[in-house]
Amino acid sequence: MKKAFFYFISLGISFSALSQKKEIPLWDKIPDAIESTEYAEKIVTNKDGIAVDVRKVTTPTLTAYFADQEKSNGTAVIICPGGAYGMLAIDKEGYKVAEWFNGLGINAFVLKYRLPSDLIMKNKTVAPLQDAQEAIRLLRRNAAKWKLNPNKIGIMGFSAGGHLASTLSTHYNDKVYTPTDTISAKPNFSVLIYPVISMQEGVTHQGSKDNLLGKNAQEEIVEKYSNEKQITASTPKTFLVHATDDKAVPVENSINYYLALKKEKVSAEMHLYEDGGHGFGLGVKGTNASWPKTFEKWLTVNDYTLKNDGYVFTYFKGNGEDGLHLAYSDDGYKWNTLKNDKSFLTPEVGKDKLMRDPCVIKGGDGLYHMVWTVSWTDKGIGYASSKDLIHWSKQEFIPVMAHEEKTRNTWAPEITYDEKSKTYMIYWASTIDGKFPETKSEEEKGYNHRIYYITTKDFKTFSKTKLLYEPGFNVIDATIVKINNGFTMYLKDETKVPVQKNLKVATSKKLEGPYTKASEPITGNYWAEGPTAIQINNEWIVYFDKYTQKKYGAVKQTSKGWEDISEQVSFPSGTRHGTVIKVSSSEINALKKQ
Image (cartoon, rainbow, N blue to C red; front, side, top):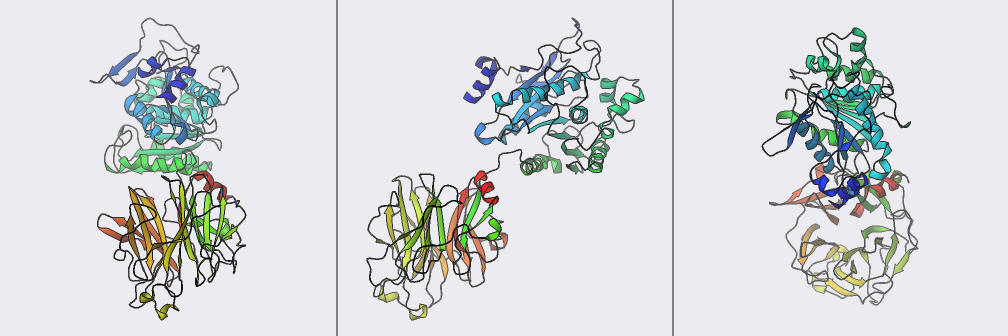
């Protein structure tokens, strides 16, 4: 409510007025107006006192619905309710639609435009267009104050409101009044829902035509306001919706407008539904009920909504010689390479100067912290940090196992941040010759890993290395995530005889353990390693490297257990063991430019 209060105060409208849905006057002085004591505005309300429709509009207004600034990129839409130019369905095709737009982070303004009348207008045919032009100019005039993007202002209309929206889209340069400035009245896009487009006999909606042009309109004016005939290459991009069985406004209105846009090579998208009739608003039942979701996708593709956070996958290729690779995804299922699959960071530290198993997290300090495997036989790991995943700090070697002379390796390090203690835990798999002889197997060249860890608050000073997890078998590739009031560890059972080579789960109330006995496998009858887990749409997904099959797979946690969704995900060819992290859309856009 504070945001709304600020906006309306800036208009000189009080907070108490806001609670009563006070509107913003469109004009200081209405052009070409005729004073009439016989003409009075009439508002029809429902049993709850909500305005359902408006008749005999005398004072055109905009009712503003401002979106949460943190969820908006400044897009605004002016909504023109329908009603055959004789009334305005201002609730169903106005206020409800505005609230829906706010849910998408889009600012919405319901236009209560004047309905054609010779009693109060010198030229009733141009009065609605005057209001629409001034509405666009008013938004652009106040764009800075209202946090709007002047290049993302659209017009939307239902039925006869669609005629007004299409009229503005094709007659935005018409000099129908003298504006107070030179601000453009051209919308950046138009949205036409079961619109009246044409004034031609056999296609038009007769009531709308009669109300706007009069019953004996000359052919010249009919042609002028048949908007499918007025389209040029400069007409704004358009989204259209219509039902084939519309008996009030024939579907040919939308079809002909679309074909004219196509002829002029104007960007357009049209959705026709088998049924729905006329006046279904945001959708009622059947296939027409899906149009808002389709429209939402169109808005997103055209950059009219603030894109949701996406995901970045950090990985290596080959033996890790060339360093860090990144891919991105909007949904966590389809992954695309960044930088044409070239390395973002070349390894510089460690015995072999490799960058395998890169694990990246975003820490409490806002930085991205990364650790990685530097060698097959070294006693430490690599570390670097970044603000943007593009520019990285100087690489450091952290000798986490240097104190153990018989350490053979330090593999697949990971980081988990504990928000409660503001502490980072770094953990990895190592084999120390002579340790845990009961599970040593020559089948794995004598490797017999356990999970070890250190903690740090600043990546400058570190705790002593300790054993984190001893499950009673050869274990590697642990990754830990915070879940509810505890922590879940996903790990690889590296046992070869009898063969396991699968992923399992252990849990703990504390990050540093103790962790429970490992679960039954959550992956199938294939070899899996390098798990990385993230929650998407309230569902936990674990991605992993199907390394013998040279591809990536995934499982999803459901109420019935773990479901293999490997066939639903796609990763770039050659991707190896990495991590998936949530990243802002602006950061992904910056990565795409590399």
